[in-house]
Picture (cartoon, rainbow, N blue to C red):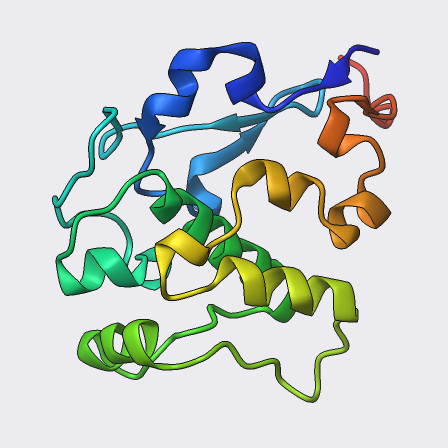
Length: 173
């Protein structure tokens, strides 16, 4: 099997794309188990900061909520929200109303429910991704080099991650 490499290492133009709507519904797996990003309706190809308000409520980065200029780090924030949601079962800043969610995104620190066991390295990674200041947010390369990713997906940081063969289907047509 071929190594899995982040798209930005394979295609430099991808580093200039801001997707702006990373969420579970926009992530697909193909028959070989490759992750594919879908729905590029809000995406833009840019090398300069943007200010357009768009995306899905729970995944919006603080800088987008308050209307300041942003870059690709809004996608890193959304990745952190997605990771939290996968590990905890709900979005980290979910509120009872849209306004409450906006307030929590811009104001509240990340919290980890006591009833959910989460490894310390996963919590540390989330604390460094879901940072209100985008300049202090981890980069994609730093996420790939994190202790949690190294433990859960050895080789991801170097592009040497090799996927296991997909499970055999029980029914062949």
